[in-house]
Image 1: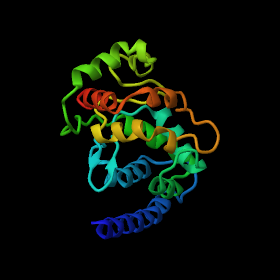
Image 2: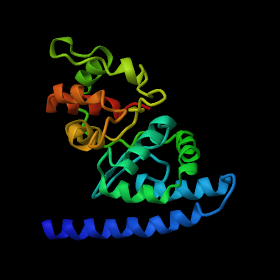
Image 3: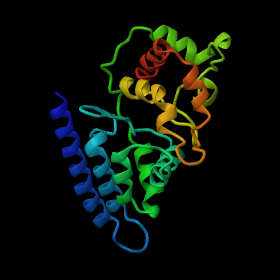
Length: 214
């Protein structure tokens, strides 16, 4: 099983590097970026993130991009470029995204309106709703809604959580300190102490709740 996993990982990395060449060709022109170039780059993103940006659960869980806040996408792409957010695949991918393409691409992805991916566990969603709406003051866990909004759609650099894949939310909250803020302060750093205070059961509950939202 480990050998197969390694082989799949190598194949995925090779596929990503091949895509980088395609993406760089789409950005090669000078002057204003055309709608066609933006759509071409978006197609390059959606190969992994789902045909409508709804996210994808395969060998790697790919997060939902549809409806995501553009400023958040911008910040995270820069964090990958600068090594402040660790993900070997995305750190290769961002080499194919020119600086001038980042905001138009983020705006395009914001306009996608895919339904939630679904398929994750639903147990604990009631607890997740309570944590999201009111927090757990005794455990020093603030309400998620304070920053992410009552509809979980985020604002500006605060990401949308509504419809995000259950598995991606659990992975992100569990590994937050290891994947963010590796060099300098990431704009998402405010989440680090919150993630540390959440138990595995509470993380699962929050993920079950937000993954069901539209």
